[in-house]
Image (cartoon, rainbow, N blue to C red; front, side, top):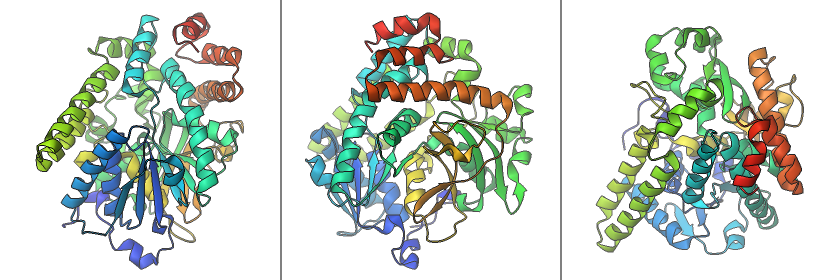
Length: 464
């Protein structure tokens, strides 16, 4: 198979050269939440990276899990996988799935897309922004996901081989913090949007991710990148002066006053910088994003089931890939100005959050130049912030996991927002772990997208 251009070329021979010393060289990788529609893309990315052990799939919905396993195998066959080269096994018991696991990937959504759609509608009925991971909807999601994650992680630590936990479950910042507060010391939060600046530069300049060291800081879905180091030069300075780069990768933030900061903005900052505009734009989208995705996914599942019954495997795979292309192309469409790349296009060559996790899994022994932006409950990387947050920062990757890199002082205008949202996230995590509804209401009162005037109504409407 021909190599792909840019930062997503294959690395099939890498693991043979390293002699199996990497985390990804371990034998058993367990994926919890494998009924999700990104599971086949994760399998594809793992195979491309050279993983040849066993991938176990587990989900509370065995029929959905089996459907995604079938699609994943079709993708692997298209990649050229030979019989017996990689084991992909659906497991009905969580304890069996986690037995002797070396790494556990968790991507769950309690309540499914129907619950997301209901959350968004409830938020808008209160005059609040309805976005899955931001504001009151993100807090509602955390209340459902953190308790479920705790159970999974307890089983992973009980049955696995001290596995690293790769948390893809939104809202990643709150859930990663909550897991650490629960006693899980080997957890990393993974989010594809955290590494947008790195992968944008790689696409634009035709470089490999390991050739660039990003310098990023903030919280999950509230972060900035201030440098992209390459051979002693900060590439970001020049990129932010290039109109074509800005229009392609920062089209949400083209106002001149934003560009004077020398920062690359995470796309979710759109909701915090212009909340009134965001509320208007998101509310105008019909149907709302959650409801639209619920219907799209329902059609996908029904179509896949029909095509597999008809033994039309090629058409099933085409349907799956078309779904992801459509999903990516419509992401934040209400805010885009056209001619952009969202960073969510797995089917366009990127690997999304799977690629970020695999970057960590294949960490090499000793010193490493590989740097990725991760969510870590170790805020010493940002010394001027309090030590009770889960932060999104640059981390050096090696065979023992990820080591946060010391960043300099956070700019004042960024620090104020980080401190406000970070304090809220800590209160949310504590309130869930302690079952304290009063503390949860206090968290809502401090959130910049909710506030004291709406907190009580949120408590009642969302039945917190």
